[in-house]
Image 1: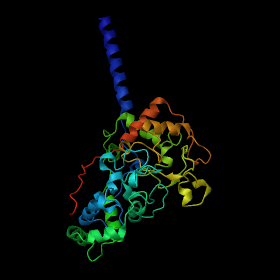
Image 2: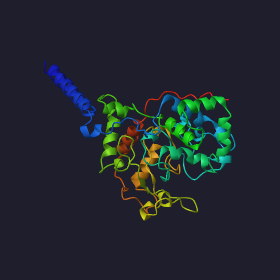
Image 3: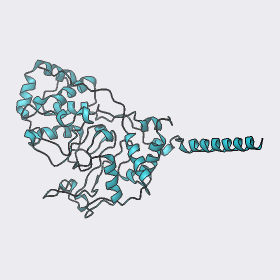
Image 4: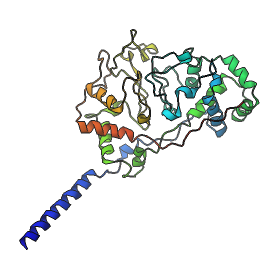
Length: 343
């Protein structure tokens, strides 16, 4: 009898321990402050509200290599939907195979941005859409020739008339259509979003712990720059990358001559971040763990470091949890099929 009682006590203790462990690992519901990280509706300018015909036209233009100077490069050549709307290269490859100095940023959730391009030189998505086309080392577009070609194609004329009735085919309508399509490239309904909506099973305990590391100023301090629903402050920061080029890339300083902007670049979104390796504006980080380790070190070149950069004291589990959380920012996607282009 005594032996039976002892065994029963041991079993009860084990059951209580297991129950406590499960309770400790249970993901709680989001707080009111955390729910403010939910993505809002897609913002649109009043003079270019997206409509299905505008998105359809923009999609055709985005995938059409005939808009480039050599007829071989489209927007999708660098912003490939199969590669997280980026290109999986350390830095972009431009017109004629020239290797560019900066990485191709994803266009995922670009609709929520207020600053565009790594240095913020474009002030609207419509402005940004023409930037690569006008750059000689990117698409090198001959706009008079392209506009004449589009006007000479009945199928394209019909698409433009349906999307922008009464407006001529020109740089302005091309830019507006491209921007309308890019505003349709939205990542949402990630595990993090479903958790914010109240599904406490959407995040694993490891992902939730990673979120707490991410948002804690005393831990990851990631939210100092990657804040809000799109995980970017739309600001510019020098994060201490060591520039290997003979002439350092001054980034935002080329646009805004303020000392703190030397070597500062735009904070990228973390939405779909696991799909867009390699990382940083120079592609120097191969994995998300490499990114975390860079921030743990507090950067490499500290000569003009952002005030938000500091060495981090994270355990191995905290580092792992942080990476796991970032993977919880990958949304559900409808497969993208390249359109049949007008002939």
